[in-house]
Image (cartoon, rainbow, N blue to C red; front, top):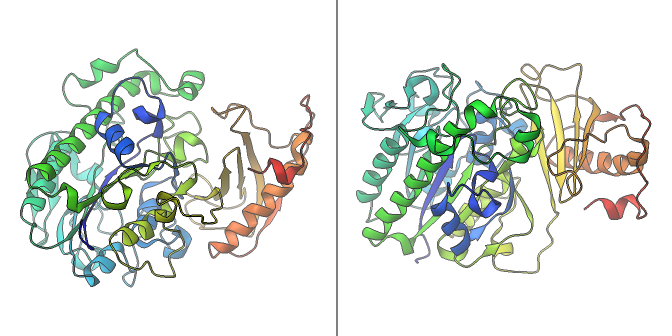
Length: 451
C-alpha cells in the first residue's frame, strides 16, 4: 500500500452494534463485516457522540462536536465555511465522492446545491433519502442537480453506483463516502422494508435482551430490520469483491460504521435520541493498510475519533482543531495515554449530556430547555445512572440511590470537564433527589469505581 491509499467509508444508518456476529448476534447477519473486523481492526467498543442523523453526520464530516458545527439537531445545514474530510482529502490530491444520504443541507427533499455539498467533487446523493426514495424506488441527484433513478433494491443500487465510481477512478487515490439509509425505517410507513423473503428468515428468532425485556415495537419490526442488515452486509461483500477483481483491495482502507443505533421505541416514543447502549453503540471496523491484524481494541472509541483516524491512515496530518483522537496508535500497540470514556450530546428529544465509561453510564437532562430549540443549557439535572457490569441491558436506573451518591459526584465532575473540553460553558448539574435503596455500598472508593 502506498503513502496515499484509497479510503472508503461504508456508512449505515441506525444500525445497532449487536446486529453483528463479532458482538454475539447468532443470526449470521454479517459474515462480511465479521471477517473484516477479525482480519482488520475491530473497534469493539465504539459509540456515537450524538444519537441522531444530522448531528452525527456533522461530527463525522468535520471532527467537531455538533455544538461546535452548530448542527445540533436535524434540519440545520453544515456551515459553508466548515472544513470537512472532503476538503482535507482534496488538498492532499485525492478525488472525492459522496453517494447516498447527506442530511446536512437545508434543501428539503430537493437536490443539494453545490455550496452545501461539503466540498465533494463527485456527487450522487439526496439530502433526505428517506423522503426521496423507497426500498425499490431510489432517486438521487447528480452533480448537475438532475434526478437519477437507479434500478434495484436501494442498497444494491447504491452499491452498484459505488462500484462504477471505483472502476472509473483507478489512476488517482480517492476518498469515497458511501452513505446508506438502511437499516433506518421507511419514514412514511414506519416500517423496515427488507428485500423479498429476507424478513421471513428472521421472524420469531433471536431478540436482543433489552428488546426482549422492554418490547417496544421490536416484535413486529425486528425481522425486517435484520433483513436490511443482511442485505447491507452482502453489499459490503460485493464492494470488497469488486476491489479484489480490480486489484485495488491492497491499496484501500475501508471504514464500516453507523451514525447511531435503534431502540425500537423502548426508551422514548421513537428509535434513538437517548443515552442508552441501544441508541449509542455502533458496529465499527477498519480494514486495510495499518488496520490489518489490528485485532479487537479494548478501548472506548467515539465517532468523533474517526475523522482524524481516516486522515492519519491516509498519511494526512489531522488538524489540531479536530476534537477527536486518531486511534492508529492504539492499533499499533503504542504506549499512549487513552481516557476510556466517551462523551455524548443528545438533542431533539431533550437537551441531554452523558458520559459512558467501561462500567458506568451517567446522564443528565435540562428539564427547562427544548431539545429542538436549544443546543445546550447552563443547568442540568441528573437523570440516569447505569451499572453496565451488573446491568448491561440498562433496566435499573440507579440515579437518586443513596448508595451511589459518592459515585455520582465523581461522574458529575467528569461530565463537566468533558463538556468544557467540547467547547461548552461550565454548567450547574443538580443531583437527583435521594431515594431509599436496599443496595450495598461498594467497598472501593468512588475514584476507583469510575472505570
